[in-house]
Picture 1 (tube, rainbow, N blue to C red):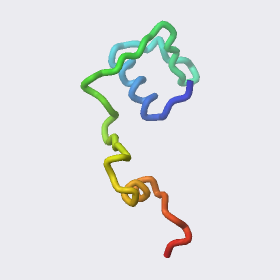
Picture 2: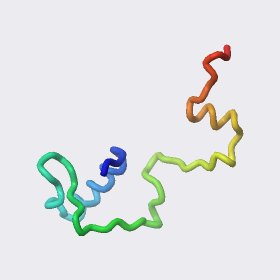
Picture 3: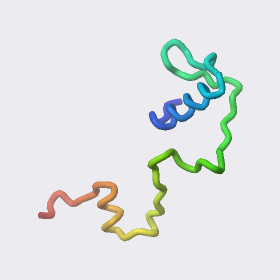
Length: 74
């Protein structure tokens, strides 16, 4: 399964912190056989990531955040 670099780094850091070095394969992948993931209620998002409900912001602000400008506008 492919995941974002941020997700991979967070999972890898947790394994290293708890001395689970045996899960790292030679090619850098992580073998998670028999390992379950659980959401940590105290860490809802990685650092520096902000969750935004698109319904709570204006259309123009949404378009600006995601770089959705009209190329024909001056």
